[in-house]
Image 1: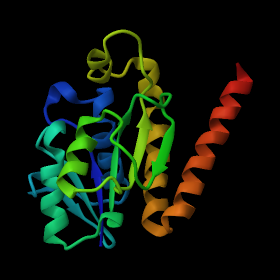
Image 2: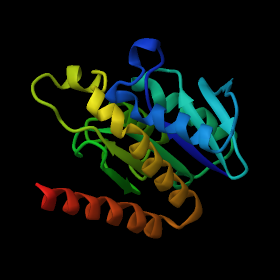
Image 3: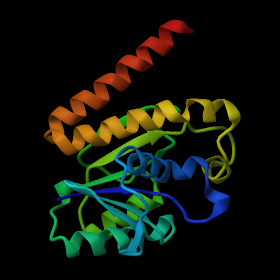
Length: 193
């Protein structure tokens, strides 16, 4: 059994903010897999599919690790069985990057997960939100503008493909598939400019 965690914040005011890209991806995956309505479990919205569990922690971003740890312990998992999906200001908007380990890079939700699991070796799928200008908190918690909302379905579809690659392939092959596609798309964008 594997665990996919979409990071975000509960509350209507956070819907379609850049910081809730992990939640948007989780909702999209649940819809695509026809998982139905979530139940409340592990301080999260919880779905169970054949080969994975899907969580949207309701603890707010900074305490996400507590919800992850509860599910992790309940299902007696190892850290390679956990995939954290979240927003990242270090990547251009819509870019994906799959990694098997590393620091939290200043992301409080991932910091919480790493702290609660006690290791940097937590697989993660980062969704680029760009860095904006000026106030970082305002940027991250800001709502997606109309032009970005038009791209959101494609970004979520690509994110779900990345999650599915992680679910079905070993990590190295999944990383190769996800990251090579992202780099190819970036090069195509650069040549169009």
